[in-house]
Amino acid sequence: MSGHNEHGAAYFEKMLNIIDVGVHLIDREGITIFYNDKMAETDGLKREQVVGKNFFELFPSLTNETSTFMKVLQTGIEIREKIQTYVSVTGKRITTINSTYPLLENGDIIGALEVAKDITSIVHLHDQILDLRHQIYESPSKDKKHTSSARYHFSDLIGNNEDFLRTISFAKKASRTSSPVLICGPTGTGKELVAQSIHNAGARRSRLFIAQNCAAVPNELMEGIMFGTARGAFTGAIDRAGLFEQANGGTLFLDELNSLDLILQAKLLRVLQDGLVRRVGGTQEQQVDVRIITAMNIDPKEALDKGLLRSDLFYRLNVVNLTLPPLAGRKEDIPILTNHFIDTFNDLFGMKITGIAPAAMQRLLDYHWPGNIRELSHAIESTYNMMELECEIIEETHLPASVMGIHPLRYEKQHEAAISTGLTDKVKQLEKEAIVNALTRHHYNITLTAQALGIKRQALQYKLNRYGIVRKP
Image 1: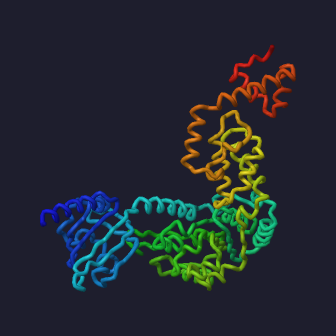
Image 2: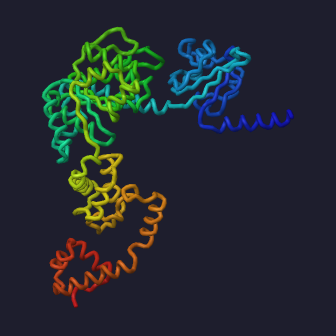
Image 3: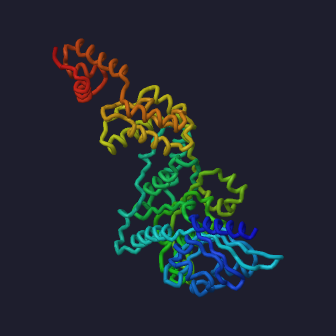
């Protein structure tokens, strides 16, 4: 029996060394019992350096207050998804997302198990972005006009839908003041474009417009990003201005506000009420003048009912409320938007697509567009990758699988077959006959023949060469 147990334990240990998360097991005194390969890679240590050693000796930067391991050993309460930054004995600075669990025997704590996902590289890249923002903020140039990331204006917002136009009308009026604006609408409806347009039409147009998606950053990092950090606030912290300081005099756009932690929502409310910002770990407060524009992709009532949004913050931000309709609710705008994207991608790809076939347009009109305008843009871009160079009209066969209502795997096989065989012999023959007939009717005048076929002269010349048609009888 013991042989089976040893065999199973060996396989269990092998499995723990294969997985892509760190696993660290300590006893009640902080001595490491097990330490897998991934955790060793993360910490920059060897397993033999760690097993049997005291935890604090290996990670001197951690304390009873900052160590998730120690908290669990002391309280017996598990900690899930906690971001932790520490320095190993080798001097390597590491950031992980930890879940730490107490190990109990007859009600007594005998140790703790920690599972860690290394996000050091992700945090490093994010810090680089923040440093670039900080450099812009610290730039000696007093004229920040050309550093604003707000590229869109009201003239870029396209559509004739009544609800859409009403929202844009309200947005234009709101641009005359500095009141908070809350923009609601499904993902992909253009909430940030409206926010940028409000900024560019207002008195703050020459100052910075800074956008931050609240769902893109873990809440443990968001406080420092939003309010800034003071040197020594935590391991590796430097003096860095937060979003409010950087956007001082300009506009701060916070997208997916409902993803922001409730504690941070309370701190955000305080800044909005008194205009004072204090960096994390700092003691001094700074007065800031920032216009706040927020956005949510769910209904505010739903966010309030689910406890995702503080009611006091909602009322503070909901001074001006703008609601963008989904694309499925403004089908009359699909042709206008499609032509706009065709112009855009013609310039980008150096192609000369002149329009879209009626059957293909009907497909666009019939589709439900869960990704809204952003999905429509991607769909049109996709067609450019499916078209032959000589094509000038977007056909049904060029549209992506989702729009066509075709299973992706079946669609992919169909396209692979089309790409490998080109046009079928039958279609080639029909096209060749149509060209020859048109040439005959117009006495082999290339310009008149191209006009009759509805294609450009260059495209006709390409097809003549392709099919080996002699231009003169």
